[in-house]
Length: 138
Ligand SMILES: [Fe+2]
Picture 1 (tube, rainbow, N blue to C red):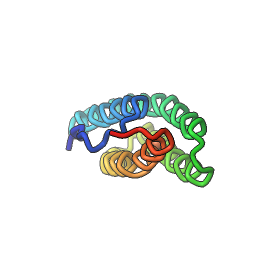
Picture 2: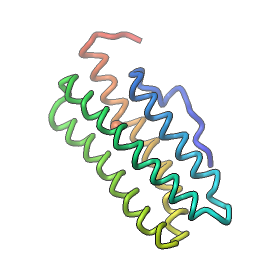
Picture 3: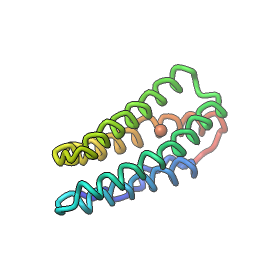
Picture 4: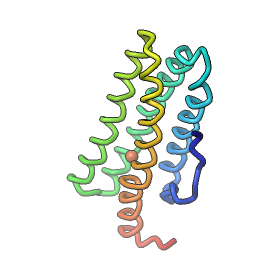
């Protein structure tokens, strides 16, 4: 269940990789409690933490997207993915607060698929744009 950090997830942009690793470790913390009796209490605490972390994470990334003159369409697409993720977490949190355990299990699958897809997709796309723009070779 745990997401093991892989080299392939790295974008080569320190701030993005740093934030992504933080998010992956919060997701893994969530997995740690998924089959325990007090999953609801932990899920509430961890999802709250995730939302707080993501507010910084996404605002740092948004600034980067703009600072590197990413195309407006690509910025919109990237931001849309972030907004969708936050919205999902906020909705899940409301259901967790009402004691809904099923939402924790659904969230477990969603977290993994969203973060892996986002890191390998939109974050990588942006990183290769930055590298080309700056002629950085790796
Ligand atoms: Fe992103």
